[in-house]
Figure 1 (cartoon, rainbow, N blue to C red):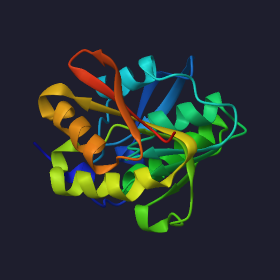
Figure 2 (cartoon, rainbow, N blue to C red):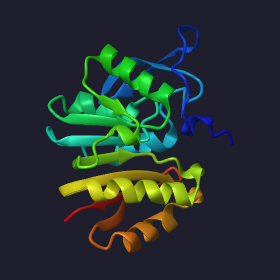
Figure 3 (tube, helix red, strand yellow):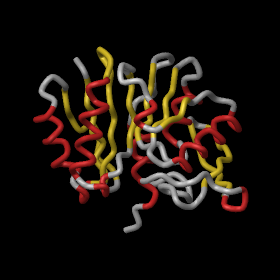
Figure 4 (cartoon, rainbow, N blue to C red):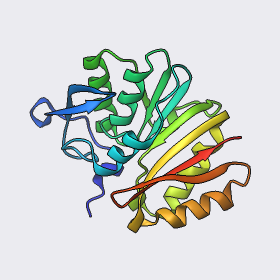
Length: 200
C-alpha cells in the first residue's frame, strides 16, 4: 500500500490539480485535490462514516482536523460553524496547500499547519480524525498521546477506524492509556468503527 501521502510532499502544480464535486456540511461544492495525498478522488468511506454519524459540531469553540488530507473534515467544521476556530493538521505539505486553496474558494477560515507548528498549549473542544492507521501502531499511538490530552474540559474526539485495521484494539488501548477520558463506540457502519473519546 503506497504511503507517500503520510509524509511531506511539495504543493501540487496547476497541472496536477483535480476538481471534485462533493457534499460538505449539506452543501454541494467543488474542491481541488491532487495525487500524493490521502483519498484524492473525493471523500473516502471512513470519513463519510464520521460525517454521517458524528453529531453536528457546536457553533463556537476550537476544533481540530487531525490528519486533514485535502480537508473534508476541516472544511465541514468551518462551513457548519463559521464562528469557530478550525485547525487542519497534516505532515503533508501538499495536503495543507489544498486545504488552504479549498477554504479560500469556499469562503471559510481554516488555520493549517504541521504538528510542530501548532502551539502545544492549544486546547480543543472538538477533534475529528480519520487517523493514518497504516503508519503503524507506534506512530499512531504517539499521535494519540500528543493530541488527545489537548481536549478542553467537556471536549470530545471522534475517530473513525476500519474494523479490520484494528479499530477494536485501538479502542481498548485508548481506554487503558487514558483512564481519565471516557472511551466508547457510538456507531459501526460499513466496516468502520466510530470511536468517541471524551473529557468528562
